[in-house]
Length: 288
Length: 246
Image (cartoon, rainbow over all chains, first blue to last red; front, side, top):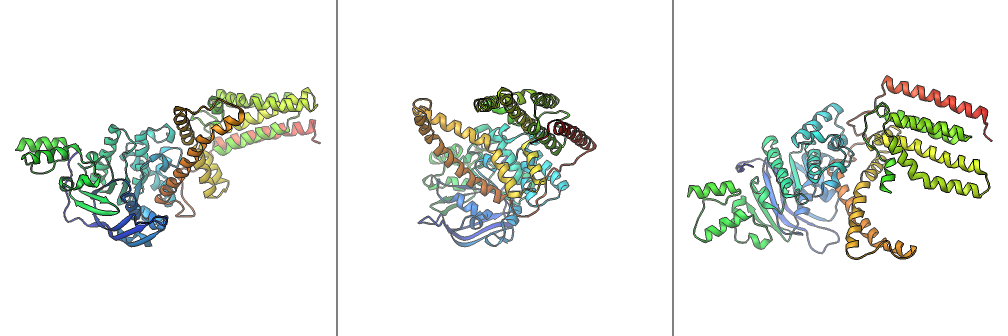
């Protein structure tokens, strides 16, 4: 996994403007006055304790809120120039892909290739083009050899890659991942993280990712956003946010390398920046 | 029980029968089904079952069909018993039980050789509404998932001391409640997540979705179709002329 390069001057792909949302059966807002801009090609990590509004915010960005879930909606979300609240889900689905936590619940068909084609079928993509896009997505996600397998014949990692292939085949500019590695073992989780990095680098796909195992995805991320109680409380480069003394109080699971960086700083050993991989840490210590 | 129910579960096999267009396979199974209903003597049933088994052998699914027949054996015995007790005579009781087994094996031939994807294509071809087809496909797709859920819930409840196999019939039925409640709750949660995933992948955005595959009948399918129709018609006419109904 290579370290990311931050991208100043990126064109805005998604913007959330003073968004608040309250579910009808809830006394308080799940998302409160959140403003967020996501640049083209960026990987944005969203962190925070359970119930802080991360998943609600993601659903506001892909349009499930307000199209599927109704409630008190204030503010504006724009993705790729389309105002989410005023654009039908079918149009949004070509711009925003969504990978849910449990891949089992988003594989509909009986074979991998037919499931990858599911979204394209719904968009009435002609058969020849569909074939090309399905093959391309399966190749990118490394599931071509599983094309005719049934979902119950796949491992959890293979299911996650199949579900992601189904999203990628629709060629969205922005892909939202809601805890994509939470049900995976460490090795498979690392493989999925590497895939995300490759899709970002090779296809320029923008990602917004909710993830608790930050050590997996911090090396890929351009930004880390922390939420608490429905509000955005920290937003910046991952190394800056993870060095913030308040970050742990917001329930963020700080990666061990960032802990070590903070601990070294406390003891007077100042590294030039908060490293995201053991290799970066070794390099920085070497350069001292 | 799980082993026996495998007689109706699809398995991917390469064979001359599986190569046929699924619509032709459905036609052949339907022909056997109708002939089983028409058959009037035990010998006719024996011939029919023989033909079904021959096709199962070509489809390399003889064992699976055998499992379907074994699975249905209890019901066949029940049919035999009821008819015998009602005084229809030994021969008629055997005939009805054998007819039941012939019907089961003819439907099993279709299901073990036809993937759920092919079933979906047939249903679409028959003009079923898309939502009905999708509901059917999803229900079949999630059978293994719900079975796994049920097994995990049973294990969890057993580890907490719940004993399913003890007590009277009523007590055993009551013991199923701690399994059924979480199973239904899980399924409701799952259906919510499915709906979200469907929306996110543009389900229902067009009234005429395209398909990755299309069913195309070749000369091979047409030949099998004509041959099977000819044989089934001849067999039907023979039965009708020698044993007119009513």
